[in-house]
Image (cartoon, rainbow, N blue to C red; front, side):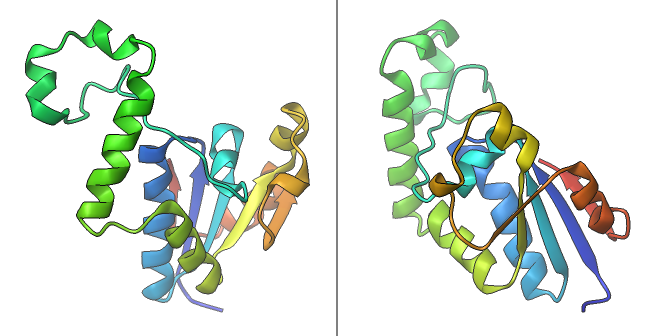
Length: 159
């Protein structure tokens, strides 16, 4: 066991919010931390066998837009049907062109580094999700399961 512990709570299930828990967890594990991530509510999307998440420009004013659209394109325009798909495609393309690992690759790195991933059982039940939809290597538990580890962690992050 490591002397240093990192506990992460992952609550978001979009492309842009999927990166922080996996990047921080894999980095901490590489630095010798013992790491656990508790996935709850929409964060459970990151544990599905097929990660199919998107990025939403709507309500995300800090998102840099292509062609300086954030300077001339009205915010309400991001609600146009199909805009989310277009922005997701553009973001994935940009990440690939810049050599950024995919969420699947980062998640695999975490599994390889023995990052413990806990799926919130209450949320799985609440949304009538099937455990067959999720990857292997998971533990299912509630907040108490996570607190056993988080209560002794050196760093605890809510993402």
